[in-house]
Image (cartoon, rainbow, N blue to C red):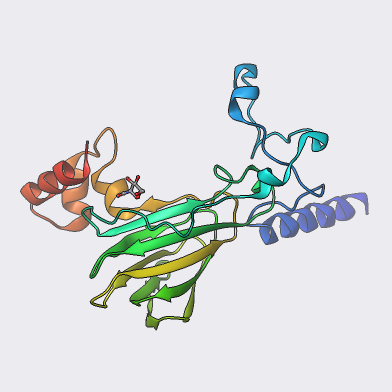
Length: 223
Ligand SMILES: *[C@@H]1O[C@H](CO)[C@@H](O)[C@H](O)[C@H]1NC(C)=O
């Protein structure tokens, strides 16, 4: 009887842990992150950040300015992401939400990437974007759409996705993410730009490419 009860409790706990795949819920009104300099010497690390004394919390801890300023898109991809996460707004700590502005030059793109800890919902504020995401193995199904000003699209947590400016003008999108720190893994940078580099034999076989092509890509994306 006792054993059956323990098994039931264990299964319930497992089910609970499976349903909370995103940031854990806050256990207080807020937990404004302490600046790293205030505790980094203690050599203690927590999942998230330490909370500032609530008495010391100010409106500025929940404030960020400058999202009206475009990021510089003069780079290889022709895009720029300005992230407004817990590193920019300490008050976001434990709240499971953050924001980004994405600027695109004409034909610029935010290349295939994933957010390991957050679902993304994106609205086009200016311009026209071809967007998409791909489901996990074995289907690897592509969901894609052309978005115009005012259109909204969702990229589920962890899935590889991209946005390409298909218009002749600059484009701007605002994205919200279901994590204070959703993380970004840009596929090309992680695979071809790993530091130290991944053995080219691995990538040659994985991508079925000529080894010269792999070494060229490693030079392009590496340091
Ligand atoms: C994005 O824009 C900011 C502000 O102009 C700039 O400092 C940063 O280097 C740019 N990032 C990339 C990847 O071009």
